[in-house]
Image 1 (tube, rainbow, N blue to C red):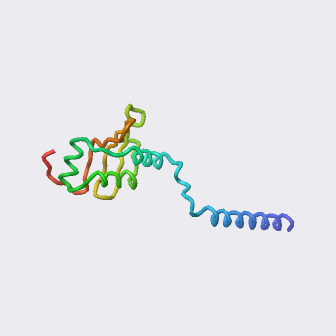
Image 2: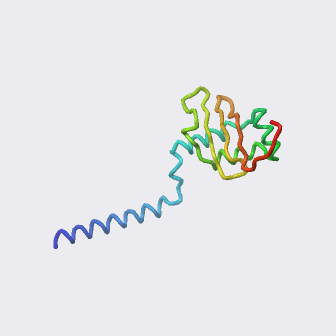
Length: 126
């Protein structure tokens, strides 16, 4: 009986602590420390440029560089297709927006998009 009383008081304290923690910290973004979030912020901070091939594909699809920025902000980084240890670093990001995927080449000055795949397959002269 004494053990069950102690266990119930302990579990009640744990539940109250979890509830207070949820109330105090639920509005904070606790996922900023993950690698994907840090890469997306670094891409957005450096500025995005499109090389000639990527610019041609964007123009063919009627898109702009801001659509690439949306992909970088909302997409998922695929580390298997990325070259994280290469110089300069290269990241492959996939998303559900107008741009299906793109390769982002990160240099010291800016981020250059080298390859773009659109959601709709259009026959471009690029």
